[in-house]
Image (cartoon, rainbow, N blue to C red; front, side, top):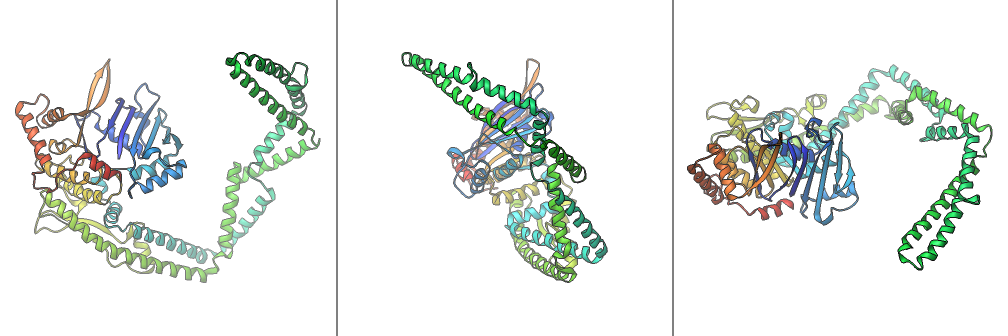
Length: 589
């Protein structure tokens, strides 16, 4: 679970720390107060990109720290494995700290448990720790690929989709190789000759990794050989050979300090420092003397180095411009030559490879479609149960997909990495009306409830411990707020949840209620996040219903609303709320 979130210099946020509960955390506040900044901070911990303009004016950088408590259950096993891969050690005390820093120039720095890491490392970990469902998910869920991912996530068919995608990639590559071999044989042979010539030239150069830097350094030394000898000889003389050398001086000082330290123990530290200095001087002397001895080189060496540098730089103009580019291109040329030069065994072997790859693709496609058909039935039943609780008892949901996957090249042309053929979520809002694609559903409130139902089903299957719902109830009225609150409470029974909401009926279910507000101090605007006590939460619920300065009746209604949410009296859910600490322990596992 996410124990705490510390944010500094993020837009209007100067500095704030939020300590979350394990169950349902609610974030409310006026529009424009800064609620979105908390979600932005969480997105930063997921490794998402944000504009540099979010760095607070006058600050050099923004910083977000998230402290996660890891349990020992199946949710945290991949997280611990990733931390071991990145940091080489287990999280200390079962606590993982993620840090994201973005400077005013837009450059990011990442730390995992205090150790430097990459943005990709953070994205991997963040994907296991935090899931964010926002208002934009309504539009995202219209896309066929998102619908396929949703079906696979709920139905557990993601692995089969991965097998199909791998088979699709293999089949396409096999077809590409066959088309290349049969449609451009003359070009293939010409390309082989060119690659052979290119590889021969590159091998004649014989460039080795690091050679250019080594030769540049050697050339610098050889070009200044006399001065280098003088400088190094002077150094050796000053360090150890002259009458007033550093070694002799330090030896005398060391003996004197040792004698003094035998009387005044406070001088023992100074004596140790002198001893270390003597060792350092001796080591430096050995290094410089060794380098000085090495300067007695072949007088013809300078010319040889210059010739080799000229040859390498000429080669890099053709195959570079850098040494790394040269070596990479050499590997690519060799690999392409190996592939083109009869590596596949000719067109007949390629045709056989295509048939085999298409056969594997067909089997994977049929297996995926069968599994998705079964998963679709379970998804439909689950979503319709959720929609009934959300006052849409007559709405019907279905997963439309092509059950005939086709064969051969036709299957290849109709497939994407998300599956064979078309897949679409369709709904029928009113009895007697036809089914329509979700893309054609007009009502924003209806769509919001459908998306909430889908996200509820997703959250039930999701192994990510911390789930964020960012104003997904924006188009749902107060009448349905208690229903939505019950749904979120059910999710919070197995996850740590944060909901950003404008509905008091939803906020009433909070295990922990936070309010975001703006204030002006010394001519500057600040966004603050405050955890509310019971009385403060009542006032906030009343303000959400009736505005600031709510009357006594609104406060009384707020108390009744919270009591109703806590008592589980609404028929939308028969399951009562659990204690936040118990939910947190379950979410952490």
